[in-house]
Image 1: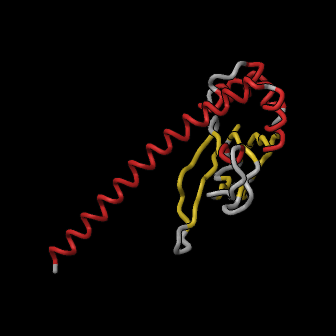
Image 2: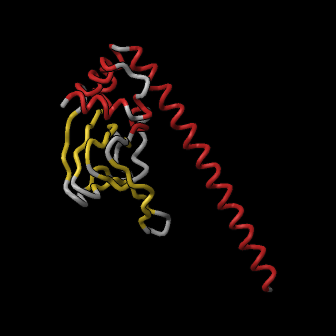
Image 3: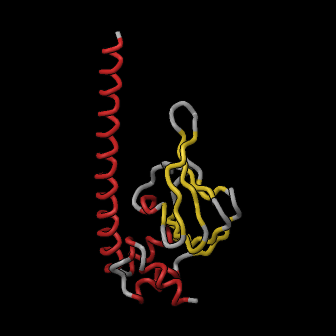
Length: 164
């Protein structure tokens, strides 16, 4: 069972540089939680306090817009994670996460993680390096998305002007 869990974690971008010993330490600081379909895992706006790793099943990530409409941002499954930013800051959760199917998650709480990195500086270095790379990739993606939306907005404005 532990070999499967180690393989799961080692496949995550967040932990790809971790040794098996370091991965075991992460697993030892995690709790295993089970959720039923449609059960809420984290609520947008609440305090972020943990990283979650999907061991099995599928979750959906949603966010409400300014008009109160809920949008599905992503679905993620086994071998993926969410909530890693909450190990870095104390800001409220930026989105909600629901179980899409029955699922099992590993939860690494902020306090447990702080204790882990306080005693294992190599884990701390590898984790923060991985998070920096992940956030840089997300920022690039967000920039592309924003640029695309600006272009669409400009095209719509041009079409409206032409119709007048």
